[in-house]
Length: 247
Image 1 (cartoon, rainbow, N blue to C red):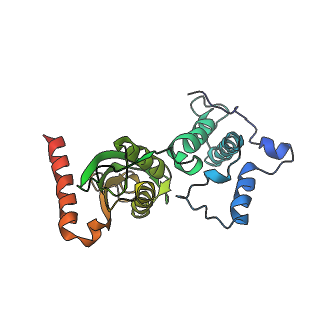
Image 2 (image 1 turned 30 degrees about the horizontal axis):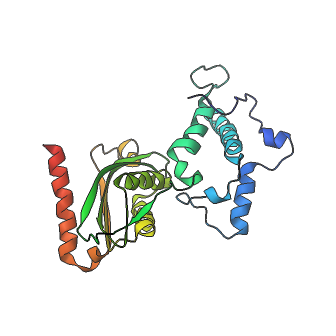
Image 3 (image 1 turned 90 degrees about the vertical axis):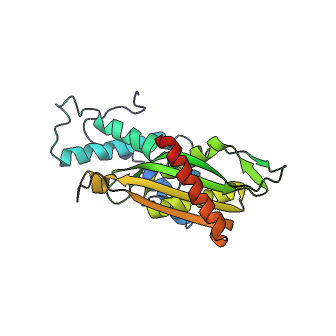
């Protein structure tokens, strides 16, 4: 993929050269003025104006360039790292953290005209995130169970929403709650259950270096929370899905 920003070798922000406040400061000030949180797993798309994401990519690339220099990497003479700053900036803003800087994908909901109230599950859905402590990958799968309410959404939309939510720095305990909030907002199910199983590279790649360890957590809401038999049915359906995939 071709970078949208030019390489700059002297490490000087163009915006600063022009005497203009860096775009990150302008965006941050709008958030502060409105009293809006901008934690690692928050979405800030509503406060980014047209053209500013390109500016932000430029600014981030410049900061990454300085980071590489501080790591004593010769980015001026090493052809392997000459464009690393641009690649990293593009990766963060356009790919792995895109859920912070882009609006939620459009999700159409439809009336539940048949008044369906049987449980269904969707999964495994691949989820990819990054640990907000070390910014290294979290890779895993997600299963979603629904007891429909008055409205329903297409199966593929669960994947799109999960990708949007997880494409931010997270801790897994918060990610599952945010995803549940978004699904409830979109289709107001009578019951909702989500299970996430993921490996954390902050444990696998560094630190204790446990290559097989995973984390599993879940959230249940509505009828799944209040009716033990429905909750059990949800977990049984997930087990059947996993068994079918393993055969």
